[in-house]
Length: 329
Image (cartoon, rainbow, N blue to C red; front, side, top):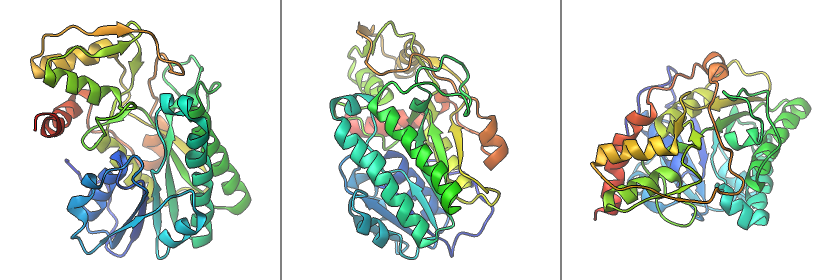
């Protein structure tokens, strides 16, 4: 990863907890914090979706500590927070289809697990908790670009769970003066994103198809569009939000690049980079999906100084290199 320096503070005496730190975004955040000499970086993960391979390289670092445990257990959360200054809460069960197939487990992890972390962090007196919110919260609101204070009705159980996180964050801010920041991610992609399993994201699936010379499956007519966000931009957002000193209430901000790409355009670009000449196959629209997504990132810029560095096209090259090491073994 690039890991450009995104902070000016000395973090050598700061201790961080990254829940879901063996997962995709979490492990990239851990990499950044260790690279820039954080005092302590703990990871709490139950490995239901995370991978030990994502954190294996950190195990010999004396500043790193792994706690294998589940956020659905309050005492585990409390133990993980001992001596912690900042919390990056990335642990969740992602995927709209997963939540449709199993709404109960998604709710247990994303809602019950979230409030456990919220309560434990409040009681531990941490300086800041930043959590993974989601652009799925915009639901059926037709407006583009998406602005934080204009949302519609959720279209999936997953979207409901992530909206409930925001509601709890607001209540804890007003009731307990514990002010968190929710980052509404827009289709984050990049190295360490799981390419396997029934709930793999579209970019890993497209890259795998291209590398194998196979036709990808595209839901609908391919004109569904997304604001694809390279993971390094999400790392920047987390670091700046964690260390922000101007937050006096609960805040929710969009984290994206601010550019819309259709699935057809995405496949064409990946085909161009990999020199693949295979036509996509089209199938029915996926239940619970938003048709178009594009973020307004003005609030993130003004509130935490967020400025995305890597476009979707910039991110495809390092992503491709990482997936080549996975698919072409």
